[in-house]
Image (tube, rainbow, N blue to C red; front, side, top):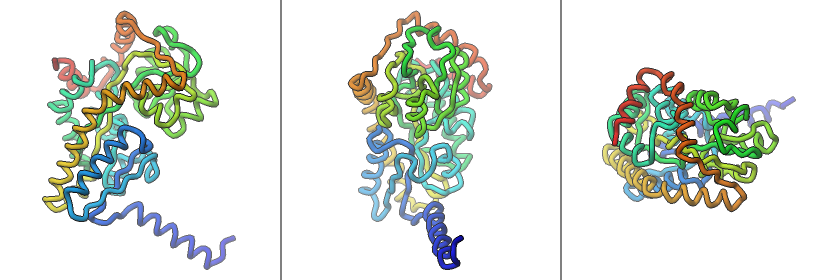
Length: 326
């Protein structure tokens, strides 16, 4: 049993931790994200930090990689409540805030990064950002990730039929769960920091993830095959708590926007090389890329028709707008 003095010390320590979590200096922007510092997202955050601190007198950016401040599944709600100033979660984590986010995790909608960039710079991106702002967030940029693909640990998935019955991990996304079910697999939602052990212990047979994320947390040690069907050209929305942004002096607000634009441009310019580097790193660790013919990709696209047709009307409207882009 704790003595009174010990209890007081413990209470003080807990209080200090809670204070650190919920309050930051007015000139400090804490950025929380789940990837390690080697990942492209973290390196993009570093560009933002360097640029913002060079543009302002006294504004500091504190970075919290590897979910060291907030669990990834709580980042969005924490940012809306103002418990952290800025976040960079994968797009799927915004699905609880606006159904429009589902568009960016719906498989085989976007044909390339250029196609997705055009959508995010236009009406599709503006519509999504408007919803987030209405919920208390200030979107600052869309940062790209390497394509979402199916990795497996033992069985080669050369064709769609090879996927049938396999337990495949996915990141939290109702859309991707529907996708895996439509493809004949058994979807299993597992947070990123638990995937390695789940694969190593045989809890799942593979994972829906991206090459850069897989390499950054060493999943390429337990995953051995990539089926080269690029399901999702996705990414992350970098956003601030809107009240925190609005409280900044006008000059600092402009500096934040400028630093975010620079980081976004850097991310756009580096995503292509990141795909190549990530694949090469995975192959070096023994991961084999299984090519898919145009006919095989068409089979996967056909399997996705039911998923596309089941989307919310607002998502289907945006999907039609996106597909119409040249």
